[in-house]
Length: 303
Image 1 (tube, one colour):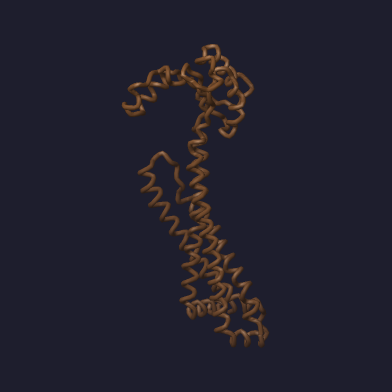
Image 2 (cartoon, one colour):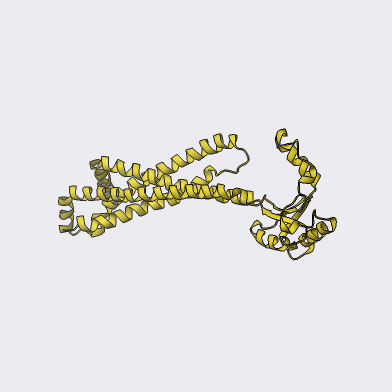
């Protein structure tokens, strides 16, 4: 009987304040869509880092006769110097950090560049202009600096380059996009709290006489306040579910179907990732409703 009464009061409150309730649903939907988008962007960044950082290599470029760096003043790296560099990588102090070492000669570097570049850029290029190099794949790419410190000062080494630098700007852009989405989400969440507060307040004021009678006949504060709390929770949860559905369709059809067919070399987030954040979106919706109710009910349901 009490449950039926509470549910009836929730339905009546939502019906009486249908416009405000719809506003709560829409604002919660928009704000939680931004929250979910920010979470998905961070998930995507994590997947890209795991995938791309695991594939990139450390490039140790060797001196050539055309090198202008001070450490290459003696000319091109000699076979003995190359053997010494390989020994450091394969059996020296950093050997445990190295997964594999691949040597690329000047001729191989030239052939590779010619195959990729426009002919107008390569017509005056000769193999001796290209530096030989060691391509080092690390067990843990984050240990680049250790390998760089161990090889940078060796005779015959011109430059040690970490290919992860190629992706730094991309990840910086994606992190900036996450911050923008999070900032917009914070503003919209604040708006949602204010709207829920207004909705609960209007509902409480419209039933002031009823709540007064309930208090006079001995109803508990919980029984009086629960219908109002549930009104906000229902509206906010509806917004969270709508946000989840929108994110799911966006990832399923825009990312997995359209984007993945256009750019095939990226491991994208999936619909399962959306389902993974869905409980958090619903929890945030309940939190919004709880905060708004606590800010309102103590004042507008008392005698």
